[in-house]
Length: 306
Length: 103
Image 1 (cartoon, chains in turn orange, blue):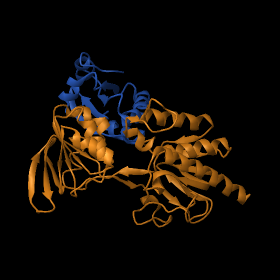
Image 2 (cartoon, each protein chain N blue to C red):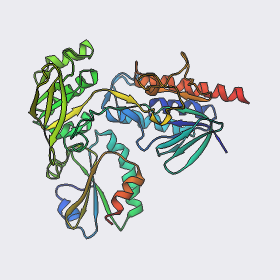
Image 3 (tube, chains in turn green, brown):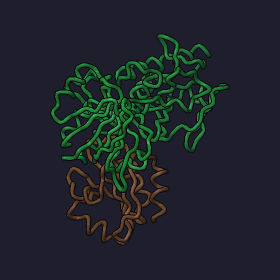
Image 4 (cartoon, helix red, strand yellow):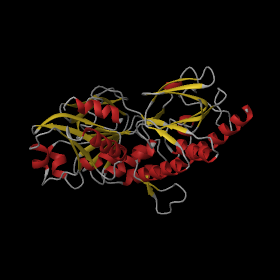
């Protein structure tokens, strides 16, 4: 029998949708992905989620959301979704080992950290190349490391990494930061941080572990080699929408398009919540908010079909 | 099971059965994702494979010795030798496939 609602993804949007859908007796099935919890699992202190005046650790916040969703009867499948078919109802959703049918679907697959895509990067992941400063910063005590990126995330990582590293070089592609003023100032004032402008990583060097970078100056076209022992990539995110291409309407940046003021996609009965449909706010609390909207939208839509 | 610097030689390197070691730390989100998966696998493969954890925060020397630069990192030891090493979070099925080769 078809599920009333399947929720794909398990970040703040997915869990909030699950809490609302479960309390509305829609018996939601969540396909959480192999990694539950979304981007907050990669962070430490979350200081801006309302209700936690002392702050809360990202992974801890996600565990509490999971418990809350389960408390009201959400069933969770810890697999990745591999294929969807929204061309006829009930919709079909396939995961690693199972096939499900659903009257409605809430897509909350979020966004993932972007990699550089240069030679050496993939080979040296976990050997000095990292996208998780909070996980891996510890291993770079008194080492010279580099951060790539000019936005808030890059500044945050660079500042965090100065707790461990001897020095942090921030490679910025342009000649100015994209980061907010407050974050830019904090980074600029930090004596352990220096900036290299107009700089792009052309190659990550090293054999068993990272030994340095080939850096291209995009103004002079000169390439220099720079010895470093760690590389942290913070160049933004891309939405996890490739699974839905050709079925759900995406914008030029590949984010899902929803009808303004709702979570409705171009397909009736399919809703999108959280970062997968938001390149502007991208906050845990906005994701939770749209997750709630998606559950309510799905509930109303199902009621209208009865 | 928790391994430490003091017990590592005896419990891992001298072990008659292959050992899967999960290098982790309490501040690491992806490690928390993997913890229950590793424990489930330990239940399923009990006897064929010893599975245990090393807290890198408390055992920095071990982390250094095995060149851990990212967590979670998993190392499979057989007869005191490293036979496989990989990092990051994955599903139980993927982890099982990866370690069963060495059993």
